[in-house]
Image (cartoon, rainbow, N blue to C red; front, side, top):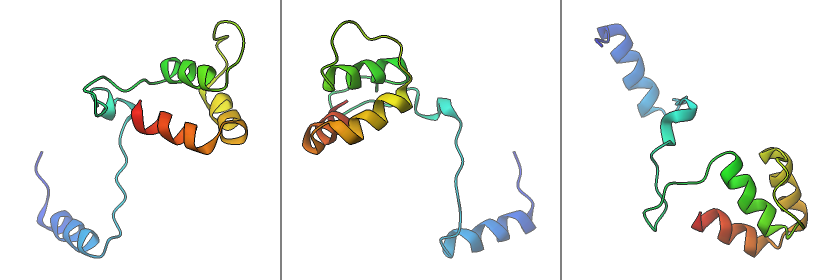
Length: 88
């Protein structure tokens, strides 16, 4: 893909003035790995980890990830949530 000289100049100016916003698609981090070399849990995989952190009884019931994260922000110990986020 070629970028016109006008667009290149505009981007250079925007980058040097720290006014660039980068939008990425959902698949951008699909191959990302944690410090242990494992793929990062996404969607229901991460929701299951939050379910366990919150010590809910029974099997994960397909509660949506945003709902579980909101519950974790309110109910989990901040140090435990931070550790989960850092070590996933």
